[in-house]
Length: 414
Ligand code: AMP
Ligand code: MG
Image (cartoon, rainbow, N blue to C red):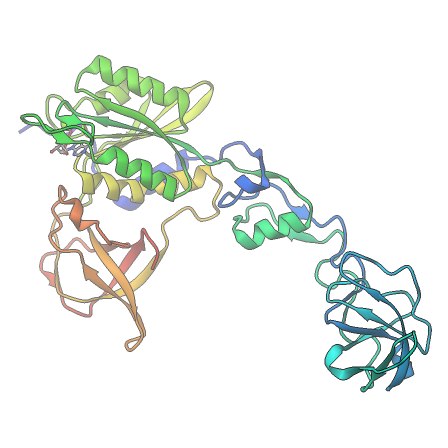
């Protein structure tokens, strides 16, 4: 029997190797509209206070609070964006809209519900103020939400909708971020054809490339399609070199098993350094990780197994944390929760298994419940359909009963 020359690493050991080789990309500046999902590369401080002026929180009347209840002449009106060119002297009031600057002289707002416009024949109109308010009532003081010079976002934070809003508030339209890593995908195999083509004898459609390109986009990478390479050293080498030149991460699928035409490992040995070529896991044992230098940069290469499930599982377990580390995530690992099994599951005595499952929250039991996606053959992509978690099942003989607690690595929304 031919033996693999590669030592068998545990998943934890392999992931540690991957993360040690992965370093954040140099920061870039991107327009605000393209920054969502990225990690911020510098602290952001507010150049001005917010609100930049004392602003009304209600539609009503700007008053001198010491005047108290009574009927007062209306001296003008202030709406949002249109500051007053008059003062509110004691004994007068001005109409004010929500978000409008409090006019000089006034120190409070009485909301419209506590007032009445009196019927008068001649100008000015008279407003009946029915309630006594304290100074500052219904006024947002200058800087109450954000102070000038305050750090509103810190380097290392991930930009989602609220953070984008804070950048806009601070007037930052060119955002210092870590870029989306470019991830190139190459399928390998003489049997593969483009999905749009009819099948000839011995052929199958290339599912891995479309799948991985979609997965890269979903996890925040910039996908790059390198097509299909046949199983010849020359064809493969040309595509791998293109990938190394263009992308931060190169993913190949297929060609890492033990067959004569499994050319990826030797090719990567030649192009760079292979850090591991076997991992104790099911599926995905032949997953291979290498680094190579191109254009003065360190590139990461994942030789993913050809079977579609093995390909996607190893993508999540190793390539996603690498991609996140390049994108400067503080914790690049997959998120993990505990779940209870909805049915008994067999264990593998020789390898830890990453069982595909759909997790949902069970309100009655107050826990996540994991339902298996069925037959776990590594060629059966249907076993990843609707899966939002990989259950990390221990390497052990026997099985786990219904209700057993297992660690679940999240690969989709809960
Ligand atoms: P390999 O690792 O090249 O020996 O491939 C293992 C299995 O995965 C074989 O049955 C291949 O036909 C299949 N396979 C390889 N690449 C792909 C692909 N891109 N799409 C679908 N199946 C694939
Ligand atoms: Mg092959």
